[in-house]
Image (cartoon, rainbow over all chains, first blue to last red):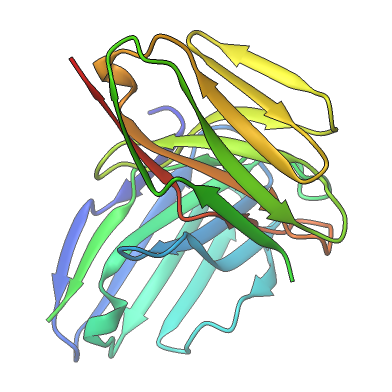
Length: 114
Length: 112
């Protein structure tokens, strides 16, 4: 595997379900990110992890819970979601957590909440 | 608050017809400006980073330029495979391991 991978690629869940999204980066980077992309809206930053510590929680509802067990893996745990949470969820990574540098994105997970 | 505005929202060109996409930004401190390409159903693909006014970067038919208030993505003699949504983004002004503030993108269609 190369770059940033995400699983699953597609997910359909009911409002009472619990599911998790997984992201893995094979780039040796030190920062990882979750973004949400909804139709007609710009990408929205959700969470930032730098060296496995969360440094940003961009006013995201508590029904989204991130986890970063090591510098290569990032999870987004989902529970009791709402239909408006349906979107493309993108994971990204970057090299240096202390300097602005390009972020590399995974292919995303298309989430549909029924 | 950092802001990024892209124009036009959509652009349809004939193959070979050159044009430019605009990205206007408002930030307290410019720590870089990034251009990405996004194909339908995929994650954004990194294209360029620009750090200072006057800087230019080129890749195949694309050239990105930067001024103190905006960036342009010039596309020369485009081909149908250049069809995509082009996004620009700036790092949060706060510094550190911050995320990116994105514009809504320009949806570019190149017709054969």
